[in-house]
Image (tube, rainbow, N blue to C red; front, top):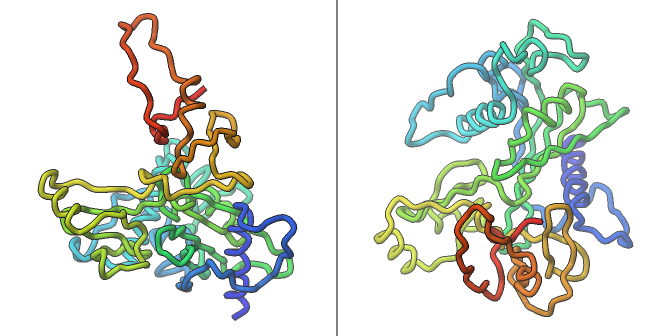
Length: 320
C-alpha cells in the first residue's frame, strides 16, 4: 500500500511538471488525480524478470531479438520484453567495442564499475493512462520503483520518451541511471507513443501492447483515429495495407502555453499568436506563416508556391 501511494504521488508529479496545475492552486500530496485512469501494477523479482532489462540481462540485450512463442498472439509479457530490448538498442550503442557492458550498460554500477552481474533490477512497475474521460488522449504514464528505493532518502528521475517511442523509450538512459541510483523513475510517452492503427482489420493497440478491434478496445485503446466504419472500409479497400500512427495525428497533442491555445512554433521557442484566426490544435495561422514561408534556393529553378491553406498543418510549419 505504501508503494502504491508513492506511485500515485509520482504520477501526479509527472503531470504537474507538464503544467497541469496552475501555480495558485494548492498542491495535494498522495491524492489520486481525477485524470488518472486504472493503474496496473506488477512486481518483478529481478531474476526471471526485472524493471530494467525485461528479464534479458545485459547479454540478452546484446543478443538477437527474443522470439515469441506464438508470433501471431504475443503475450503482454513478451511484448514488454521486446519493447525494452528494442528501445535499449535504439538509444544506446550496445556493441561491446563501443563500451557497452564495459564502460556503460545495465551491469555497470552507479560508480561506473563493471560487475559480474547481469544488470537486472527488482522492483515494482505501475502503468496508467491520463485522459479527460473521452479516451482520445490516453497519455501513458509509468512509474518504476526499485526494491532498493530508500524512503528516507528518496529521489525521482523523469524519463520522457523522445519522438514516437512508447513509454519504455527512455529505459536505457534516464531509466538505467535512476534505477542504478536507487531512485524511482517516472516515465511518460507524452501522448505520442506507439499507437498503431491498421485500417484493414480496424485494430488498435491496448495499453499493454496487445492488439484488439477498435470496438473491443473502447477507451483502453492507445490510439483510435476518428473515422466512420464506412469511411474506414472504403479507404481500406482502395488503399490496402495502410496504417496510422498516433504521433502523426498531432492535433490530439495540446501544448499548454497560457491563456491562449492559438500558438505559433519556432525553432527556438513557442509563443502565442495575436491572430484572430482559429486553427485546430497543432496548427498555426497562415497570417503568421505567410511571412515566414521559405524562399526557393538560388541554385534550384524558381517555381511559384501555392497559396497556403487557412491553417498550416504541423508538417508544413516553416522553421526559422
